[in-house]
Length: 312
Image: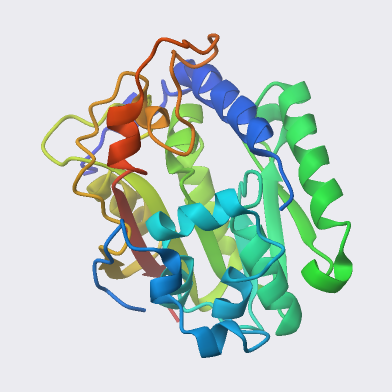
């Protein structure tokens, strides 16, 4: 029997409109130019965990993370997301086909597309299916994303595009992908009632032995899981259950993206914290009198980092 009642999640569509409307608005606002199982100090500067020699070696992950095409805002987030360590943990290789599910404004695209382009791999952006959010928001986000990443094929290569949502089809040809990434998006799929579909679609897309990599805002265990994930936090056992039910084998977890300062008790959910920094409920005008200094001192959210494998 499932730890989490499936009938509860059948009601998730009720919360989906609020959650995904905020997602579309937040991601559109973010539009811009664009291993080791150890805890890395979240206050450490990103440059302290990148080998300068590898950063200078074209085609390495360190080179891609250090790239001068990445903006300062994204680079400032590296100390919370540890992209080199995380992608190594997910076993991403230069020649891989990697599917990035709902890549947002392209934080990871700015790293992976150049890396895979140099290595003769393939980056697949599985964008939000238009039916998943109000069409104008989805269209605006997609237009900005495509315009940016299609503008420099020498750097980014030729991206492959797919779509994911309630009625979307296969992400790629069955068994064609080496890695699928779920990065800070599972809460939105729970809210929309399509989390099970996401895991199933990823399983179908991966080759035998392929990796599913998960980074997700982590709810504390012991409380009842909010069936709409309305705060943005998800319990780790639920993620593992969804993966297992889709056919995946759990491989390992890392605390590299943990943040013990995050008590998960914020007035506007996880979006109160950087990088969103909400000062009012989602969909409302910003409150100029809101004091965000406490949440700024916390930094980005506490996150699980999980690796699953499709059986051989």
